[in-house]
Image (cartoon, rainbow, N blue to C red; front, side, top):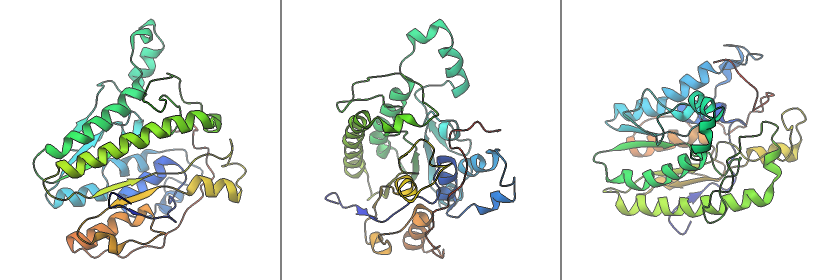
Length: 288
């Protein structure tokens, strides 16, 4: 708030798992149709992954003359983007190649890819404002999500794989350590973007879901568990009056609707802010 951000203090994610949440946010709409196609029992992520690659937000902004710059996350769905004008990737290996190398003695020579990818994103975000012309920059930074690889000073403390049981969420001391480092880097990025931008930038910082209060919130949902999983940070830097169109409970599905309406004179109707519970193991293997 001291840096001019509007904090939507009552904001929740629209979905409780990343691939559904980002698909919805980047397309400014709910994705209920997936219950029909491919069907409510399907484990196929092809459509939501396609929606992230070729999102309506990116299409709209490219149509308005913006270049789309994408920062690789290291996670399959946002690791690359064929629709982007430029992809920043500190590694040129894909997720499969990393898994393969980790199964060989070469793993002893590999850097911590998670820590390296996260640090690279923070560094690159401070440089991108110097590129000419209007640009839409998307960075999906997988922290403070576990596994926890940083302490509060940014020292790399682990090179562990993600534990699909969800138990890593309960290691609170490690979570707090990594969170302090991520907070510090985020503030640095915000300062650099604002100070280096030729024109006042628009900055959106939001979580795609909250934390896990239990190992199996998807099998045994409780009010406490779903509140914890859905509450998110949703912060907006919208200069020249843009924040007047926001409200405490705005959710990511309405973020770009409000932005396109105010800054580009478009006519999107704001949707009801809802959170959908989908009974699906968030870490289950899915068909692509």
